Picture 1 (tube, rainbow, N blue to C red):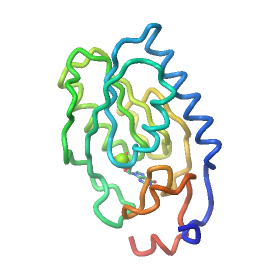
Picture 2 (picture 1 turned 45 degrees about the horizontal axis):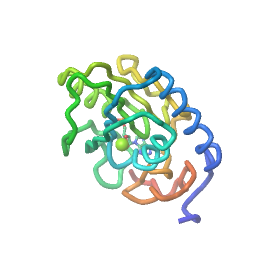
Picture 3 (picture 1 turned 90 degrees about the horizontal axis):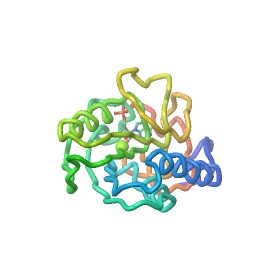
Length: 182
Ligand code: IMP
Ligand code: MG
């Protein structure tokens, strides 16, 4: 795996520090004592961010998982988002926090925010680990962002390329020849 990596963009220790900080900011935003919030996390890219973040959030919560496909096979091009598997948690009247790995073209978050809004939550906020500001459309709002990054395709810490590299502990860029022809 290591030899496929061209460079590390955000090392593991910086991720850990920022995730902890972000969890603090999110927790404070729900007041004290916070109610029983509903987390809605988007699979599969957010798994590691989710697992790390929620362990620094001391409030009561239920965790729901939703599957949205945005990349089909080995491509780095966003081709629109489609709901593949719906939620196992009722969000009506609840404080809902969407957690995703990255805010790229915003198609995934636009879909999920729209879907959840229809179900009338009490409040709806969104937290992402990464954002590519060069691409992020102004109509999709996120409340918490870990890092703004340049417009490059990244892997690691849950993010994949063709379903590989999710277990790489840093956020990194692959050697360009691996993306060639995509
Ligand atoms: P969007 O719908 O274009 O905002 O893309 C969001 C989804 O595409 C994210 O939840 C990721 O799963 C995936 N994605 C977007 N950019 C990257 C990247 O640079 N590396 C890996 N996955 C990405
Ligand atoms: Mg994703």
